Image (tube, rainbow, N blue to C red; front, side, top):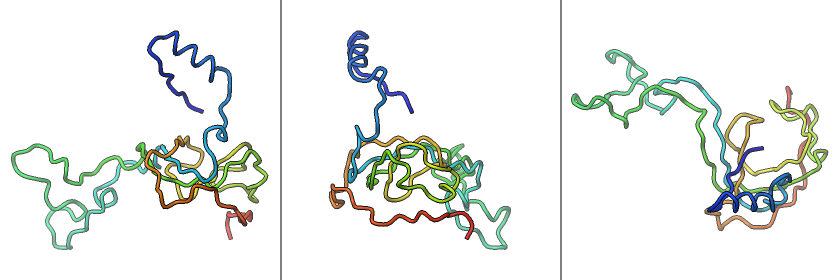
Length: 176
């Protein structure tokens, strides 16, 4: 659940629009999205803490006879400028808001018994309410809020009708 600002020129227009459509009602996913549609996914990525330039930017390790450090960038920039923003420095990695475009909605369901996996979903648990199945991976920790909006630049190569799910493995994914 999250809050959405209501547009309008005056406070009266905003309140009347909200009262007419939204106030006191729950908007279900099926009312907004449908299977086969492409969505943009907004979310916060998994946090990895303070990391060095090798892990954060993929800087190559220097040879064993190098001076000072081996896991840092070769040059930090020119003498005169105090800071080079284009050079890979250590810092916060992850826990950033990111957008993933054109994820394909496979199905939307109100019945959690359809995908009731033995032992539940790893790091999440058992489904209890309506859910959305999306093709591919999405950012963030399991259980973290994701915002799905209709795609702004949809991929024209993907079909617009929803695929039929013929088989979904419901065996336990924990252990062997």
